[in-house]
Length: 222
Image (cartoon, rainbow, N blue to C red; front, side):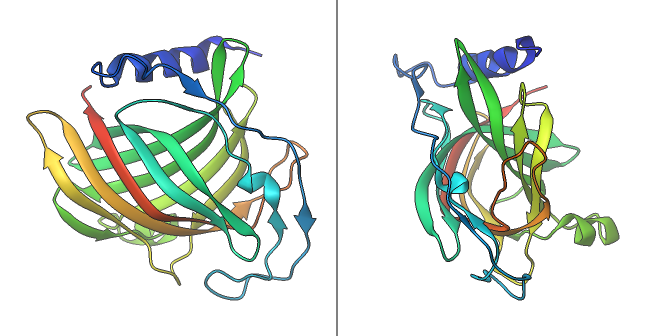
């Protein structure tokens, strides 16, 4: 296992975070143990509660305390929900914004990437922007799309992938965009359905939602 890369990722997040809070480098670790599987049927509609469920998706992971963070309610329809907090990565992709909200698992003195909620090709403007899936984006590159992924090993091995369910309401709203201080704030909601199940022996829920999302992030300059 190569443990250098995730350590550098976390270090960069720490260095780019707000320096006003002396305790912002402290990591928060929550319990990640039990599992409870529920077998369902095929997905038939928005937030179908008959979909396969696993409470491994309701076990909080770690994040780094920072004045830049993302908060939401993570929901497995028909099973439950938890408060969810992740760290933010925001950067320009061409003339649009790309958002990454990440959580981690502590490994000795390092933090290994475990979740990434992504919003891609978001217009660089204040307002509500609908979020589609990658198929819609492939047909119309001016559309935004969202995704959610689990990872394993050092954080560079895929272990489950979800795409936006366009039968549901999905959006990201930019409420503040400051290109002098390089900060962005906003809200979001996204409903996801599984595209690829995990291959590491852990079965994840077919449907996962992130509701009432709010974020404040530094726009990274490359």
